Figure 1 (spheres, rainbow, N blue to C red):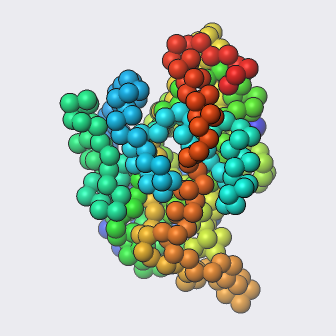
Figure 2 (cartoon, rainbow, N blue to C red; figure 1 turned 90 degrees about the vertical axis):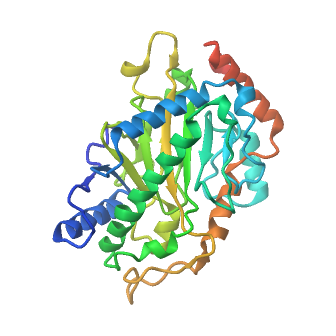
Amino acid sequence: MTDNLSSLPTIDFARFGDGTSEDALEISRNLFNACRQVGFAYLVNTGIPQDQIDGMFQWSKKFFALPLETKMKVPHPPEGWYHRGYSGVGREQLSQLVFDPKELHAIRIGKFPDFKESFELGKEDSKQLPNLWLPEEDLPGFRSYAVDFYNTCREFQVARFLPALALGLDLRKDFFLGYHEDSGNQLRLLHYPEAPTSVLESGEKGRIGAHTDFGTATLLFQDDCGGLEVESPSEPGVFMPVQPVRGTVLVNIGDFLMRWSNDKLKSTLHRVRAPPRKDNDDGSGLTRERFSIPYFMSADKDKTIECLPGCFGPDDPVKYEPINAGDYVNMRLECNVLTSAYSLHVTVRKLYIASCSRILRCDTF
């Protein structure tokens, strides 16, 4: 691991307006360059209020502080593609571009799943993927706030981000909007419990292993814990810390958009490891818990995409066949969810219970 990724671009949306000005075009070009060169960028002046972000983190903490039996009233369905509801520690393991069932099984029995728990929601009136909610009396106000926050993220996606992305690619401002009408997007509340600092620092285990996102793009809201690392654009295999910066939103490109752009835009490997020891070591040997909130943008499942105009030519042939968005996303989602490794799930659940009591042996993590 090297020094911090200080060169991560910052894109300022303050002057984007309705996307028709020269300022908007400059912002769009800056976004395109960031997505082409790094695949990650800080966004500022998005129109997503900081106090609303802070409030969502407070609600996330309240949810994960509930007793396990309460959270399990809304369990994540067994289908890998149905990303709604609560997933306990040990439910999910990211499998990077491995689709063969035998290979997936070998991976899943060979290492622990990611050490985290999550709650996922999407469009409130979706008929295909209805949200799963606790009874209102279990956490009054949670549902309303989470839905409002999801809608705020979607508003930025529709009014600014997707138009800027299109303009940066020399496409019509509304080009991507027609592929993102049904809003199969996903807001995920994530909680990483305390874990042994030495184990995370050694690389033996991680909070989330190295992976790329597989949709169109992701907005990431972080707390101040740290631990996110992004692969260096110039040194494959070398990961660099990306520090949380208050007042910014991180964005990264997903595999689907990278494919759509004929690899013009970069979907970059990233992972979550031990946060900086100086900020998180209280002498217990455990790193403090971490919270983050990604908002995943996905194309409508009934849309079929082919290489974007302007992303291929005589010297740059089309690399990928047309593909249906739903088929692609479902294939990737099915690879991520552990549906049969019961004994492994129980082992990790025991570790979670131990961590809640601040007793966690490194040799069993």
